[in-house]
Amino acid sequence: MPHPLTELTGSWTGPARTWLGPDPEVSTWRVEIESLLDGRYARLRYDGVCAGKPHHGEMTLGVDDHEHTLYWIDTFHTGASALWSTGPAGPAISVLGSYRAGPERWGWRTAFRRDGDLLVLEATNIHPNGDEDRAIEVRLTRATAAA
Image (cartoon, rainbow, N blue to C red; front, side, top):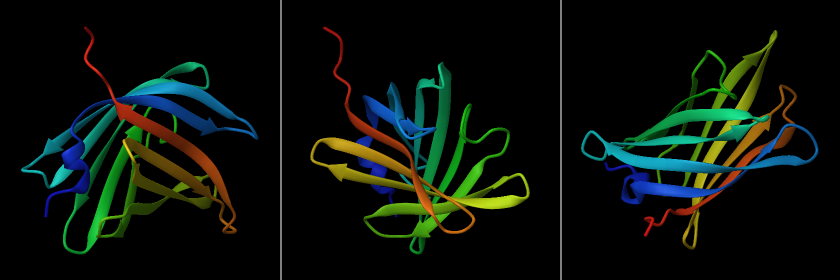
């Protein structure tokens, strides 16, 4: 089954909001989406700024008849450990993973959706008690070639 994001291959750019406190930090992300292994996977490579420092990362998304999968690494959010997430297969892409923060496990939900010509990536941080906080929102449009 081809991954739904493989139809979006190419260059994208747009504002990224990262909530590290009550007000989000805003930067611009540049994203490249490529299809891997006959469309079974889509890889997003991105760069921007987070906490005043250059920020780079990539996400590899897969899908089969049962579930979406996401493998995410970057230079800010994931530290030295990758985040592995899964969610039900279908047109909606929403996956859930978890990470360790001290002695506790926290949840992390990542969702992708189309909003007209925009590709929107939203991430939610889930406290061990179940409370949720907005973590990231990226609103991407196709990058235009320089003239």
